[in-house]
View 1 (tube, helix red, strand yellow):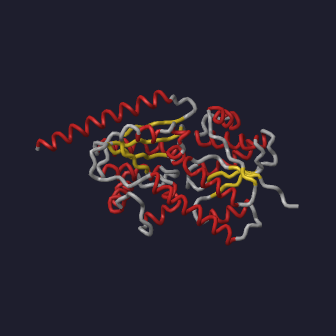
View 2 (cartoon, rainbow, N blue to C red):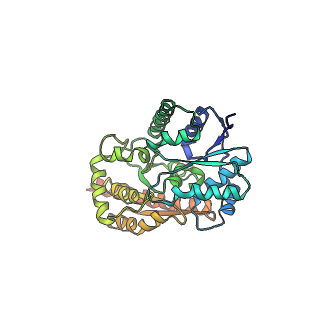
View 3 (cartoon, one colour):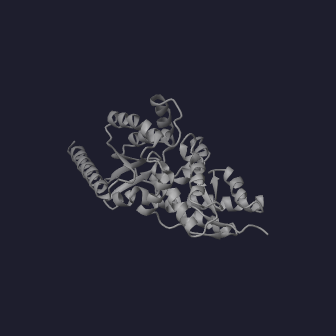
Length: 327
């Protein structure tokens, strides 16, 4: 008799529904993971027994524990972050679940890209390669379409303040982690560009080699930024550290008004490249606001910092526009 699979996956911002649809399409019972709360983070932190693990590790493990409490037997965890330690978290999380008594719960690491097809089949070996391929294609198509709606192209000539978002991908994309930062600044009448939509992460080689057109990105400026970034940091740091440097330079080239750098404590790749990002901002006269998220980050403090940044940038832009008109 085949084992009954009750599948669950930690939430991943606006892409959660697409991931849920994938789970349902696998012909198994799918358990929707609750929205992360402070209690979720507390469960993950206690189970990992280390404050030195980054916030995404704590949140995803806490979500897994809550899914197991709802009866989940199989859990999906994200993989494919190069040298970033996030790709190893599923091993630690599996051990943590065993210690908590969830001996029948199995974590399936899912790599993003073509390897996704093979990893999906490991969840259910009876799944044909053709069905796995069709599911993969459907998910990818949905992700690309969603990114086009979430991150519309920004006009180069605009009187509105333009902000570029860089940093660690889970912190950038999961609103419960970044305290809904993107929506907060959009409500301040600001144009926002995200350097790390999920479609870019999946298709990065195709975008970088010009085989796919990236929505809202000037390819020539991006290529120039990539070459300049190599001069600043000629090494692969892992995670999304290199992308953070590249996009900081890109936003400077495209005359953005400011940059917000998001990272979880204590993210090794992003904290390593932070001085480089600061130098690029200083050399190009573009302000960089760094926001580090952990269990003790206060939302009121975040709101104050965002309001102060946007107010300064609006005043600066208005002054520049006034000078330009007088000239």
